[in-house]
Structure formats: structure tokens, C-alpha cells
Length: 400
Image (cartoon, rainbow, N blue to C red; front, side, top):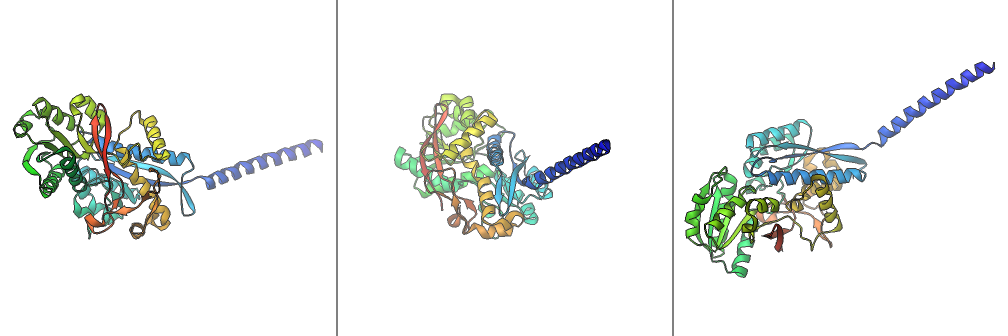
């Protein structure tokens, strides 16, 4: 009897252990966060790689941070964020393929593309598949009705250009301007808007038709006739980060003494490696943060990004915002998780604390003045001046 009782007891203990394990697994499954996929389609290779790399690295850094601290609660559900990325190689056809991939995976919110051609090319796919995307591209037709699925993720060149030219006219005595651009739709469009802005300010435009192929490496023949004109300001319209130092070096070695600027964001490390001290004084649009306005959360983001990737790109001060806007808008209206029409309805009245700036600054959608509807994220317009390997803030503005 004793042996039988012991056997019965042993069986009961084993059964209890099995039940406990099963119960524990069920409990863990119930406790596990759901996954929310957010897409990225943009350029992470080639001359413009710095633009997209800062995008996707910003998203990965912020997602890892949020997941580490418990995930993101949207409505009654908590999600871990999974960034799904696609390198479009600055090719519109690949951008379309990338957006189609996002649609196939059921992703409704995508950051990118980084250039005009790509952003325009993916529009039909995004609208058909029900995808809201945040491009870093400037054509107004992407953001004015009847378009409604694209949200500009940064300050546009036709918003920053006039501010830069006016500052240089008032503060640096600029009177004459020359423009040079790559022979592609994106930089050519930025050149045309820059020329119009300069003329509206009463500046004399002495060159506006000079172009180069994007794979050019010797810019001396391109810049020689422009340098002879001795403009007060040379604008490198829409210049890719890899080409900027080559153009700057060529201009300086030809004896150009004036100011050089661009309305595109740049990479300080690339400038330092490619042009060194010849790049000192180069003016560009920077990331949407300066040391004076950064919150502790922004400083932590920079620290986490640097630890993850071994370096930091100033442009990520802007690129950190897109994912934040997506998640905070979803928090404001959880129905938008799988319904972008709900997302759109929320945009007009949306407001949330800005975690990356000190003070009571808010995340909100703007663009009414430029597009007639709120299809742009509100980020500070920071204009930088390069000096000895670093960007220094020239001035800070904003758009409506």
C-alpha cells in the first residue's frame, strides 16, 4: 500500500508540474506584446545614402528604446515595434517594389522615400493599399488635394531657402547668387524654387542653368565659369551628401571666396573627410534640434544611436520625428492601427507633448500655408554652418 500511495503521489506531482508549466506558458503568451510593423522605404546606398541611413537608424534606435522599456500601448493593446526596411537605391522602380513589399506585409505606415522621384512613384501603391507614408521629398502635388496619403517629414527647400537667403542678405551682405544642380528632377526642382525665392528677395541671380551628372567626380569644368562670375553666394541645389564636399573643394581650389549653401541636410563626417577645412563656412539645413533646445530624452536618443551604430548623423535630429508622429497619432486614435482614414481624421486636431524639446513644445501637423491641408510634421527649421568637423547653429525658424 505504501508503494502504491507513493506512486500515486508521484504521478500527482508530475501532473501538477505539467499543469504549472502549461499555465505558465499560457500566461507568458498572454503577457507577450503584439507586434506592430512600421516600414521604411528609402535610399541607404550610393551618393545619397546618408539621407536614408539616418532615417532607418533613427527608427531602429527609437524602436529598440521603446521595446526595451515595455513597448507602446495603443488603446488596450501593447505593441513591440518592428522596423521593416527596404533600400530603394534612389531608384523609383525599386521604391515601388519596396512599397509593394510593405503592402504585402500588411504595413499601413511607412517612412520614406527620400527623394522626389521615389516619393511620386510610390503614391499610387500607397493610395491603393491604404498606406500613409512620410517622404522627405518636396513636390507640392504630393501634399495638396486630391493627394492625402503623404506627410512631409521635414522642412521643404521652398520653405528653408527664402529664410536662408534673407538671413544671408541681411546679415552677410549677399547681393548676387549662382545656382548649380545635378541634372535630375529632385535637385532641378529645388534649384527652380531657390531661384524664384532669391529673385523675390531682390537678389541678382547670375547663374541658374548650370548642371552636372550625379556621378561626376571632377567638378572643375562645371564650376569654372560660375567662379569667374564671383557671386556672393553659391547654392548647391539638392546636393547629395557625397557630392557636397567635392563641389566645395573644387570651388575653393578654383579661388572662390564667397559663401556656399544648400537646402538639403548634410553629414559633417562626410564633409570633414571629403573637404576638410575647405568646407568651413558651408551652410545647410540641419537636424531639428540644437543643444540649446534638446530635452533629456533627445540627449538620450543621441547617446543610444551612437552606441548602436558607432557614430551619429545630425540629420537624425529631424529623422527621429516620423516614427514618433506615427505612434503618437495611433495612440490618439487606436482605430487608425489598420485604418488610415481614421489616421487622417485625427491629424487636423492632433497634439501631443514633444519629447525631444525642452519647454511646452507640441507634436502637431502643419502645412496649411504651403499645401492647403495639414500634411507636414512640425519640426524646428535649424540652419547650420559647418566649422572644423562640426555643425554650429546659424539660426532656428519654423513653418506653419
